[in-house]
Image (cartoon, rainbow, N blue to C red; front, side, top):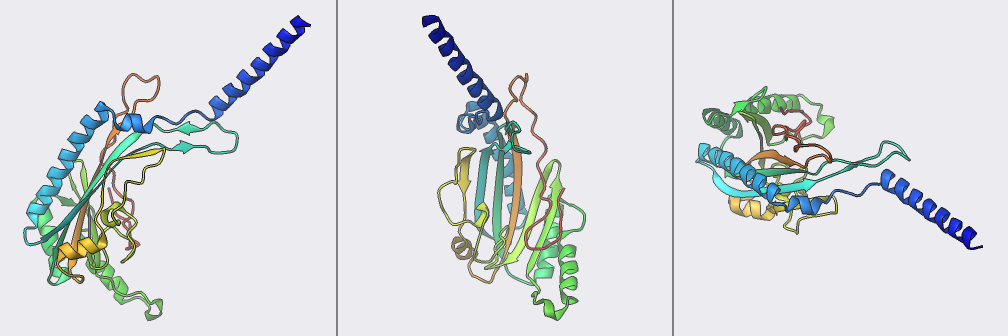
Length: 273
């Protein structure tokens, strides 16, 4: 009896071990996002990226001295995500990667078409090369398209412009709106992105960690701009500055160049680099 009991215990243990092994294989543990995000290695890479983006935005600010400084925003996020193509497939976690997005906002008045040309020239003189069609020309194209649209479409002609400019490996995203429509926002009073989101704690989850989350509410943007109907220029830069090494690899994966958006919100036209 003792021998049979011992065999039974061994079988149970083997079954438990097999079940745990299968579970661990199909559903491996998530990477330690918080631990990696707060590591000294990430902090060092983050400081370098922050300095680089802040210096570039300061150069843009200097290039448009006639504008009122309306504020800054930043979203510095480290994250991972899983990928399961079909039921029963092993879950795969992507390496933790960190990206910083920094933005600056400036307010101005005047004739919008003329001001867009002025902004385009100022950015070009500062070394930022338009990607494809310059912002002022894109605005004229959009306005012409809207003017010839069917009146039954109910679509107003928006005071909205966008563009994309490159200097070296940095890609500058540019949007100009008339308040209360804010740059980098889909709706006039609803702001889903850090640029104009209501102030709130960083929305951290198990798979994400915000090293910095600095937003500007729409009311604050309007107040600093000096009026609800002024035009606002938003310029945004981002950099993926860290990717954790893949287990078993000898070195961290090199981060790619700064990404470009495939499309900007609100226009229906795709731009980017």
